[in-house]
Length: 141
Image 1 (cartoon, one colour):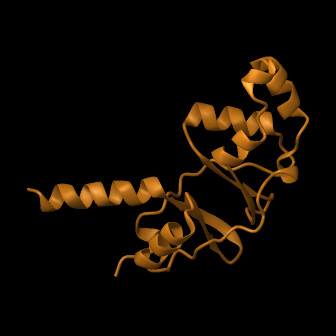
Image 2 (cartoon, one colour; image 1 turned 45 degrees about the vertical axis):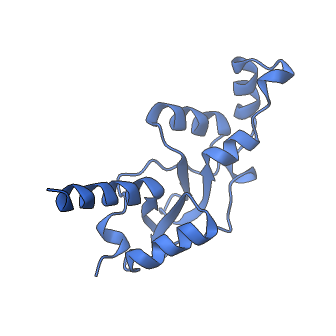
């Protein structure tokens, strides 16, 4: 029986809640990621910031704000003021099907994987797509 730990991503980019939106925006752009788990100094999971959340805090270009102004604004906003803290998480031992049901039924893009309060990974829609693709390659031979 497949578990979350079998396909979750463990090489993560994380941030601290004291950092600012400019840093997280830069990280998301540079690394092409959509979900950034927020942890404390002991790697305890404290929240999540998604690309969608970040877009909600972006001033429209139609307002005449250029990139440098947006960056200045982002530098003034700490992650802790905008991150989601009521995040559904999963355990690495959860059945893969159960985790997928949570993602589909709630339209989540990811589930942080937490064990004893510590962030150990993240499982995303992309992880499930990669898993499905690899499985289809094996079947279609």
